[in-house]
Amino acid sequence: MPTPPSPTLILLNLPPSILCGINLQTFTTTPTFLGIKSLPPGHHFLFTSPSASLSLRDGFWFHIPPPPPSPTTTTTLPPPNPIFRKWNPETERLTPCPDDTEAHAFIRSKGGWDEIYEKNLTPYRQSARDEDVGKEEVWWGLTGHISSGLLGWFTGGDEWTVSSASSGVQDRDEIPGLSGEEVAGVVGGEKELGMLGVDLRKTWREGAVGRERTEGARDRSWLLGEVCGRVSRSVGGGLDGEDEWGDVVLGQMEVCFLMVLTLANYSCLEEWKRIFALVLTCEKAIEERYEFFEKFLALLRRQLERADDVEGGLFDMSDDGGAFLNRLLKGFKRTIDRYAKTEDGMTDGIDDVEAEFEELEKWVRQQYGWEMGDEFVRSGMLELEDGEMVEMETGEMEEEDESGEYAPMIVEL
View 1: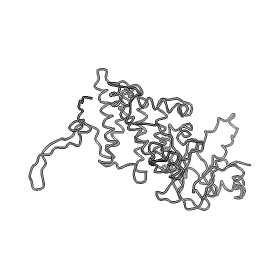
View 2: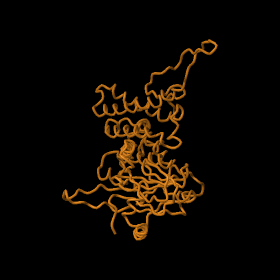
View 3: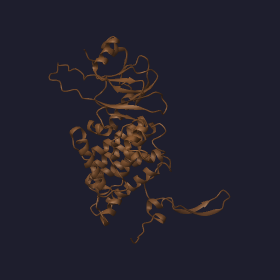
View 4: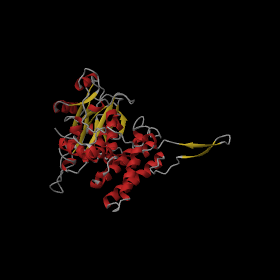
């Protein structure tokens, strides 16, 4: 049977007036809508929801391969085979078609490919407007380290499906007397997501004692290296065959952020926070793997620029809610400053990390009013409304400065 002239996603029996989204674009379906055409190469994510409210959402990743090089300038190569998904009214989800027979019969019943392609398929890029082009560029900037191997490992299968209720083991509620699989059945049979296994309560190697354990608690570089090595072996290499150190961590950070952005998935939000809490508390690794940290800071800035797109907010970025990220960024800045004060000064690599951090620092200062420096008023005189002068002192920064009740102390064991 003939194929459509461009990469195409066909959605069979999709009901009208439901929420549908692909990548960063969302819309409400109509009775004539049957899918999306002219899909560009790369990884895409499509999701649906019975309503536009924050109800349970379900989606799947898919990959459009780049066109192979044409043998001659006059040869026209066929586009990849269309991707078919069928709406299941019982589960209210899109599922793979068991075979192409039903799909092609559906195409014939609608008048064939030419008819459907012209009247029932929405182009991926609605227009050449700067807004549409900008969204497409933003999407590629948020998916640059996602590989097919990572998606298979993260979703636990070949279908690459995720829902709002999907969860990693460490984020799943424990019900006494039930195993992890039984708990998943209680919450609707949701699949278990592949997580990096970052435990910030134990950041040193097995068997470490004394100074090594203390250094591991203060500098999490060992744990970052262990995670990169272990998960890269599970995923099967780096970015689609390239083996760049840390790509698996950056890819996981991208996938989790986008699952929060599109599905409001709680477990992915927790994993995203664990990742930047791990990376921003490393010290030795900055000098050894400066290219990774440069890419990480650039990615974090791009993600924070889209934080307001999350329904309900990524998390409260006010003084109280954003304290977690604010504190981590301040600690990372102090680490960079310590490198600058060493006898040898900063190497070219760390200098690039500092430059990327300055861009991030500038952005959070403009957006949230955060100051990364350590210079602030700790005590002084305050004039009240009646003109009385009183002496005030704040202890809000004691945790960051490790002073007051947060000061380190020596104990005998």
